[in-house]
Length: 205
Image: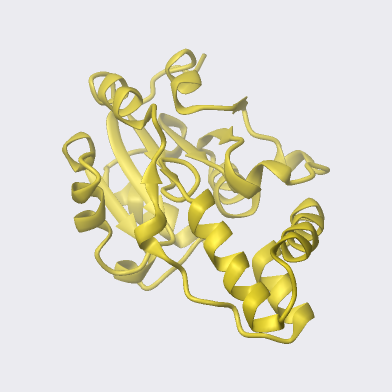
């Protein structure tokens, strides 16, 4: 268990928001452009994810096609997001640190969870993106919070866990989405806790 926690920061994609349908949509679009099958695109992407690479991007490059549009309309909340955020917002201040396009607050409100969130730090608004530690520093500064009084929760080892850990924040790796296939080999990649659902976090915090 962590001590003296004031802020709990979440990533958005594949952490609070389930993106698997959007990823499937993208891979189907890549398959159409490359005149190949969805299954072959998926299998190739999976191999890249297991090598700690961006599977959709690398597969598109390999097939010689552009990375296709991201369909935000396919994004949905994970089923336990409401309950998790309701519980944790009663214990801590809740923040977002995410690589997201403009309008992140509006999308969180549309999903019905903005009411639980005290601070939103999104890359498009800040002009800096993860894994740059600067975006985490911005969040801590605006929250008037020291790194050791904050927890970062995310699905990506490279974008969420490593930079937060290097700053001295506590970390929780949530193994959802394609980020769960990251092959942890270095000490800096090891989160303080590993969970498989949002509600698991409530048992830690």
